[in-house]
Amino acid sequence: MKYSRTLDAPDLELFTQDVKLNNPLSYTCDVFCGIITGDNDRFVRKYWELIKVSEKWEYYQRTTNSSIHYGGMEQAIFWENGLGVMSSLPSFRGLNPDLDSALNKRKIGFVIHRMGKLPCTIAIARLFDQNGAVLVPKNPEDAPAIWDFISSKEYCAAVRTFDNKTGVTPKTLAKPSFNKDKFPIFDNCIPKPYSDDPTQWIFHGHPCGSVMWDDEKKWTAIGPLRTDATVLQVAVVRLLGYRWPAELNNAMELSDEARTWVKQSQELVLFADEDGIVCIPAVRGEMKAEDRLENLLAVAYGSEWSSNKKAELLAQAGHAGKTVETWLRDKFFTQHCKLFHHRPFIWHIWDGLRDGFAALVNYHKFDHKLLKTLIYTYLGDWISRQKQDIGNGVDGAQEKLAATESLKKKLELILEGETPYDIFVRWKPIEKQPFGWNPDLNDGVSLNIRPFMTVGDVKKRGAGVLRDKPNIKWTKDRGKDVPSAPWYHLGPIYGGNEGGPYQ
Image 1 (cartoon, rainbow, N blue to C red):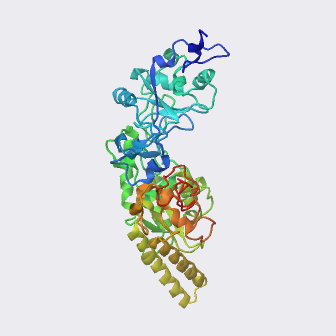
Image 2 (image 1 turned 135 degrees about the horizontal axis):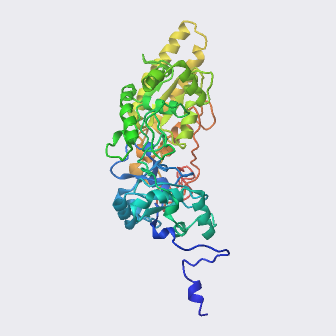
Image 3 (image 1 turned 180 degrees about the vertical axis):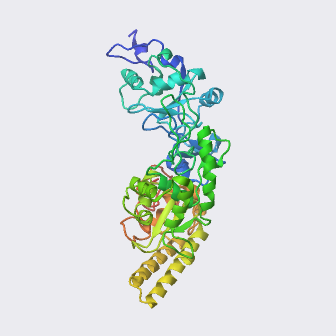
């Protein structure tokens, strides 16, 4: 009985093997937990779903799948300074003020995933997901040695001697013994923020720019322009008028190399489409998308641009031996959805024919007025041309006309927005629900894209008028509503208690 109080201790651990407890990492670092929103579907977005991360929104850093200097920077959270509607939820856990203070004072921290091989990344935000823990060095000068330790296989093995469960408690992450003298410190071992990944908010925005982290642990000078599967994706996104946060925020901390690429990206702004609609065939007097994209890439690559470079890019994008136009028609949207975590912000709307009407649309500009422009200006011009071709006896014109007129009717249903082609937002009262195609873009892609996927398939099952089907489901929603909500008993598409649109 005299040992019962010891056995009830909350941090008690029993070991079946010898474990070294001397000089634990906790002597060198403080450990903090991330926040819990209580309703991620409502409060968390991919940052590219928002027009701009500003005012009530803040960047929200998550863990990474592998240890990388800068990662996990794909999300934003409706924070409202931690005092808004989120803070009223029972399961909400807010920002630890000690974490906020430590990061402000010491200027460096590390986010560690609490599962698997415990991958880590450098903390760059002030808000962090609960799946990770944040280690903040007590002395910033120790940060390079700490990084080398926690990003090594030795660290994971050491943590697992204390806890081999799937999810490790935050405190356990700081229990392994740490000898900073074992890790030689190079100059600039902790690099300033840089990423070539278009899904990271620190991405510089240049489609083919990159630098490398060399053997001496320094960013190299800007070298040869790269080719990989993301180059064409970034170029298309720029053509549709999107710009990355790093381009628009001069106060964002970036490496000198990143700032150089940001500056070079500015010359590509002139290629951005004004209204956010780029048709793949030539429509309304505009150039074909293929030609416009190649013009942008020619400027981006400068003297390195050639037919061989174009062929190399197509091969990297899984389209070897074919054309840019067929890649735009057949591959772009599928790859765009995959790259941007199935929250696409460039939508490929088409009539179902391989050589028919097809348009790429910038979600951030796609309001009621622009949908009308797509229907009555762009589609209207295409319809007029098909009628002329029918009169001139052109083969296939009748089929194109029928497909385009069918697409027009579907888009008009979305424009009017009558059930079931409306948008429903679980957390908004009736008077704030959008009527017709008047979306609040901050509600997120997964809710606003729904009418375009449910209006009726032009080709692929479940994709509606889109070229492919993003991996989005609306049959389940982890959020719940009270019985007094007007839609509580309306069924799986709307009802709060039975599950509404799932993000």
